[in-house]
Amino acid sequence: MGTDVEVAIVRACCKSCDNEELYWMMSRSQVEFVAKNLELVHSSGDQIFARYGDQVLPLVSLESHFGFVADNIQKREKFIGVRFVNNDGKLQRLVITTGDSPHFFALNLSFSTMDSFSAPQNNTHIQGVYLLGKGKVAVVPDITNVSSGTL
Image (cartoon, rainbow, N blue to C red; front, side, top):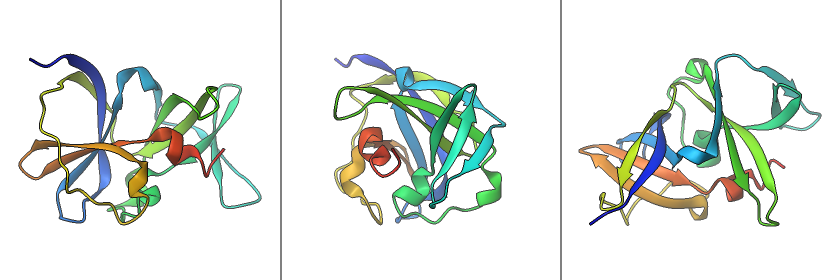
């Protein structure tokens, strides 16, 4: 018997290495906001930040972080504010770029997991992979490790 956990799932702007539809999955409690328009701030380096209210937050493309080739960069019209606890136990935030709004639902823990999934890079930043159906895979990114190069 499984326990229900509320999750947010959003379609990635790419396919997996095996040409499957790829989705990002995270806990609903991690999602702080969804926005369509945010002011982007470029730093002196390669990092881009997003201004949300009085905060300037790191902007992350999960597709780029994991080495996938995005289908259409122009379709990234949504921003998802995510909160997480870093390795020092401090609450942090970042913004993920995406083309779709997240969908929220209860995920039964007896859902099928995948053991053989591989991303082109940063595989150690993946907490888990779920099979959503034929040809559909959901990746749970380790946001703390994903953020390590941005904060």
